[in-house]
Image (cartoon, one colour):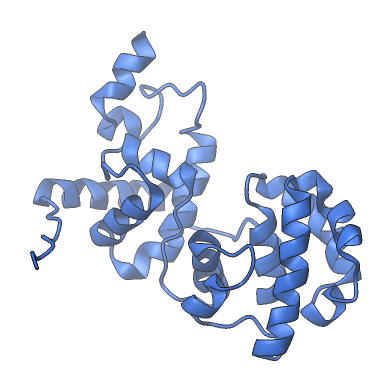
Length: 225
């Protein structure tokens, strides 16, 4: 069987990554968790609700949900339709409400009502993919993780830190380029930077502090066209 060759990262690329990290540290020395929560259960629910929804909207909705149920024991007492109605503004409410009800029941039956600090157990929960599990592990338990969503994927590509065609490849590249102890903070710094300086639409790479210095040439060609 042929061996899989390990990807190599040039010294120049590693240096660029270090310089970008230093810039992000200057812009965002503090990285508060964007989703309001009281414990790992409410964090898990908030992250689940944030799929294809803004953190601002999630933070507007969760107080109403958590007033009725901020733990799995109370959540399973709610009718799924009641959960769906509360979380409707977050979008995908039929799927998300079903997942919330089912994962709450599983937490009670298999984990004594607690969110497990275990990758496999988290990713086995309904509605919880690798990205959601990564957020809970990093922000809830402080375990080094690098949650990569489409926004971080976009910025990493713009800055030439990855050639990845998907978030899985981008996560691998970012983990290889940045020290493990920086992952949890850096993931939030990139999110904050993207919102303020490097949006998906109407982006001017020449005005972006990082793209203007490290951005791919394609960005500037597209901007001129």
